[in-house]
Length: 217
Image (cartoon, rainbow, N blue to C red; front, side, top):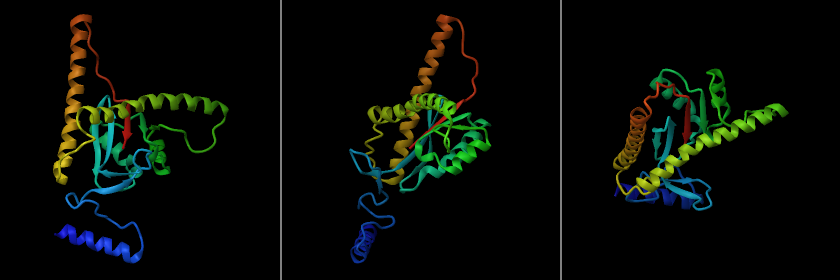
């Protein structure tokens, strides 16, 4: 009943003020925490669900931020980089991030800490820099394909695109469990690969340093 009252108040306010938008607009009585998110995609201009910021390091996906609000996620790159440093003890050498993360504050932060942020730098490059930048852009695009594939894997094999839970907390738990299972599958493949290398080739991989963090929403 509280949800219905709030929905009525929102609709009445929009009708009286002749507007089509209102803060924290309710679009589902059974799931009042769901917000409309304008994406501008050809298949669906508006989507309904949660916003998920995910990082990918050495093939393992990590949920950096999960929110049902329609917020500007472009300001989160610094927080994600700091989270990476707390986990591994150093900043990544490269961050291959979605275009929305490319703002002046993020670029300044990456420059101060010696992190190369994917994408063209601000300003007009010269002829030599332009050729080098194109090569880097192609390389970064190939790297970012891995996290696009991770989202595709989650939607095709683990139901990430069809969350059937009704409660907010339950939905978030289901999403977290799906990423947990994907990472366990990844770990199993890595262990199996190392086993075959030791068993049939007679060598094992030495420890390696995390090189790149990939961010996607």
